[in-house]
Every structure is written in structure tokens, then in C-alpha cells.
Amino acid sequence: MSLFDLTGKVAVVTGSSRGIGRAIVERMAEQGAKVVVSSRNLEPCQEVAAAINQKFGDGRALALAANISAKEHLQRLVDETLRAFGRIDVLVCNAASNPHYGPMHTITDDQLRKILDNNIVSNHWLITMTAPQMIARKDGAIIIVSSIGGLRGSPVIGTYCISKAADLQLARNLAIELGPHNVRINCIAPGLIRTDFARALWEDPEMLKRRNAQTPLGRIGEPDEIAGAAIMLASQAGSYMTGQTIVVDGGVTIA
Amino acid sequence: MTAPQMIARKDGAIIIVSSIGGLRGSPVIGTYCISKAADLQLARNLAIELGPHNVRINCIAPGLIRTDFARALWEDPEMLKRRNAQTPLGRIGEPDEIAGAAIMLASQAGSYMTGQTIVVDGGVTIA
Image 1 (cartoon, rainbow over the protein chains, first blue to last red):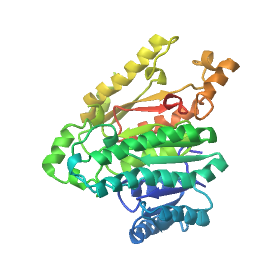
Image 2 (image 1 turned 60 degrees about the vertical axis):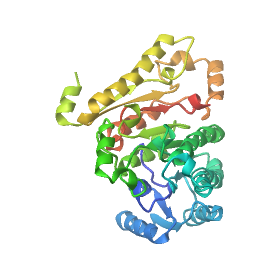
Image 3 (image 1 turned 90 degrees about the vertical axis):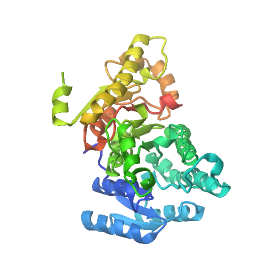
Image 4 (image 1 turned 120 degrees about the vertical axis):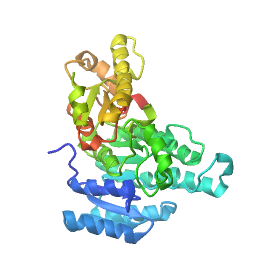
């Protein structure tokens, strides 16, 4: 059996109607998992789920809407998944917010709280809701999609970066708490990836050219290039990894 | 010796098996740890040199794994018990638990990773 096989496993991926989340949920289905496609709006999730069911067989994907800022939505997401699939083996906390662009002194309190709430507190809530049944089974993998923004300073997306650094710390803390129960938790820190979420950073040709010149691999990443790390962490391949961060950035942070 | 034909093909993956020894101090395997830290730096340097040719280079830093090479560190039951108590996953690793990271880095799954280190240690370095 392949180290990366996910047959018999159930994976929940937030923010999976597009971008990195979508690539992860599709590749997990490809590895045999039953998957839950989730984001704020149900329709795009249903499209992604329908495509997965068409490709891999009925009943492989379920669409469930959830606004990560609402604690009761997250509880419903967990409850509905358990009702439909009976378990959650893999949780990918991918959905995040970034409503502000500019120096820290220009961020409003509402924007500040939204970023900290959606990107840190919601992850904590969702993990707390999901972990007990993983602990009961003595098996589970939690993956938080962080960012290289959490590894270095930024004069324009500062609060987002604070929240992404917080993710890395959350993983380290929970690795110690959950480790004795064989529940592993790690982060992926993507660099600049061609997604709608990051459009402002790659759409302008001049900005992109400058960015590529600073990147050893000379280009930005594609969403599918984050999926491999997620599969590794979710499957038997990642059985001895916990508390860590896999940086997937074309070499930008080490150049 | 190996890189030129990778560069010619504009594709290749190099993986150096380093160690968590390269991430922290040791009073008993000090020079080994220096060499393992050097591996991490080698990967960072070469990632910049080889990146433009789409040749990727990364490290894996295993923790304590049940191998002959590391026998002295896990064979003694008392020593092992103490080590396990410091490890979130509560045990040492098996060789097969390093293979997954290597496959990931070697294959299309690792196509956007370079210059990095994947630590596979049951949580010992973050505890």
C-alpha cells in the first residue's frame, strides 16, 4: 500500500471551493479519501464536490457551507461530516481572511479583529471540535495552511502575517498536547501562489517580474504544488512528523 | 558530478539526509552535528544556484530513528525511556517514516520546494 494512500479516510478542508484548498481536496480524493468541500458559499462547493463525485465515484465528496467566523457554523460542519461520513481523519484549516493592505497604523479595529479571529481563533475552535474523535481513535492528522508571511516582516499585510505566525505556534503547542494520542499537527507555509486570494500580489506584470527575480525557481507557485505536502502530512507518509512547518515557496525565503 | 545532466534536462531533485542534530547542540556527537548543519546550508546555497535550472535541493532532518547507525542512542532501555518521554509522539521513528518525505521531495509533489528542511522527529525539537 502506498505511503500516500488515503482510502478509508475522511478529510475536511475549509476554503476548498477554489485555490489551494480546492487543489488539496481534489488530490486527497484522488488518493482515495472521502472529502468535505467547504467555504462560505454552498454553490461553488457543490460544483467542486460534483466534479469529484463524477471523477471518483458517488459519495466521495460532500459540500458543506460554513463561515469560519461563526462558531456555530464550524460546529455544524463537524457534526454534519460525522453524520454523513462517521469520522474525520484529516482536518485541513485552509480558509483565511485578509481585508487590509497597508501599514499597521492604517488598519481599523474591525479589520484587525477579523484577521485575528478568522485566522487564529477559528482554527483553534475547529481543531478543538474535531480532535476528540481523533484522540478516541488514537489517530489523526491536522494541517494548518499558514504562509511564509508568518516567517518574515511585511509593511503591507502585517496583521495577516501575525496571524500566520500564530498558526505556526498553534501547531507547536498542539503537537505537544495531541502527540501522546498519535494525533499529528503541522503547518504548510506557501510562498506566492497563483490564487484569487493573492491576486493583488501577482496580477501586476512589473510586480510579478520583480518577485520572480527574487525567487530561485524564478516563478510563482500553482495551487497544485501545495497539495503534495498536504497529502504527505495527511497520510502514513507523515506518521512521524508533528509540530513542523513545510515551506513551499520556490526558495524565496532562503534567498 | 550529478547536477550537470539535471541542468541539461532542466529538471532534477536532490535530497540530503541531514539530522535534527544540525538544529541543536550536542555534547557527544558535536562534529557530526556540525556536518549536519552544514548540509542545511549547502541546500540553501545550491537552491539559489540550481533554482534557475529547475533543479531543486532540500534536506530531511530525521530525529532518532531505529537504525544500526543510531543503535548506541536507542538500544539502552533506560536511555530510550527518557528519550521517549521528551518526544510528543512518545516513541522513536522507523526508517520507513523518513521515506515519505523523500518521495514527496523527489516527485512532482515537491516541484515548488527548494532550499528547505523537512524535520521528521516525532516533535522532539519543538517540545
